[in-house]
Length: 472
Image (cartoon, rainbow, N blue to C red):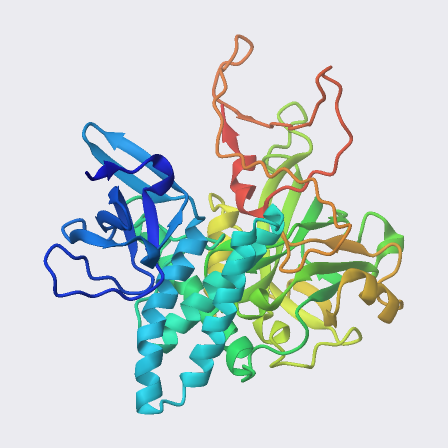
């Protein structure tokens, strides 16, 4: 009599091809997964997981039984593998590629060797994942490499492109917006182009130099009529996705048109670090300067009682396209060469975020002689190597501005404790002492469990400059 299989024998993979003309037999190819429901002597009865309508008996010796999760819905059972999603994806991809690879062999296709190399790499990576000896960070890193290799192979074979998130997981189109799918599709195209250099050995002209590099920036001078103190926020900006990719470097500028600390004149230096091969493939990267005026709300208020003090207001933006400097197509950026960046002031009711988007797409700016003078230089290697190779540029007092998020290569001993807080808006009551709605200033601090203010470095996110003006 046929017996119901226990939970340990509900899922299996065919390790041999099986075909028979006898009735009630289930035809199997190597790699087919089956859901097993009954057994008798040397036989199993079940169906294919991809098509539950294909059922029949097949020899036990042709099946490798694996661990699985069994979920019951009334009289129905659902069996799923305990393998990680990335391991299952590798198995599916290998089966699909194997059929094409055999046809390439018959046609003597020139891509035969490349596909074979990638298939062997995927099998080796799958073995490492299934060994369960890797740390979580190693698994994440390996998953990124696997997804990049699969996407490149699918593109080379003319197969559909799989849209993924930043961790390499396949996105569910039912739970993802069209805009997000489009952005990830564009990112996947860039990732495929980068992967092509690794597989084929052909070097892209837009990708030169080692994996890790830095951008050295020196602020020489700022020519602008402000009349009040100001902060100059310097950061890197991805114009394609309209987002900042680095922390801010802040310069305190005085109302007299010179730095508050006069000894810092022509000596404001910063190194934007953690830049990697992914940043070289960005379509448009800008070095953006945001000028924040610090003073009265309205300079027209001559009465001292009406004047406010130390309010931060958007004043203007200056930006320069540094894409060609980063990818090596432009090599005239040296520490002794000064570059002029025109300045665009804000309108009366214009937000900083909208002004940045307008400046990075503008062909010409009516700067009226106002702008910033800077020097640029791309420095190869990590921060430690840069300090050794360029001691005349990167000294003990040179500031470091790191990339938002983790770099492409995480060095041993690299510790980061960052919390990113984005202020979206605020609501405040008028209060008994106020007769009308007025602008208010909000201060944010970090405290411990006793309410004591902690001394931590706070970097204001540039894309939220408009939130300095919050109506009560």
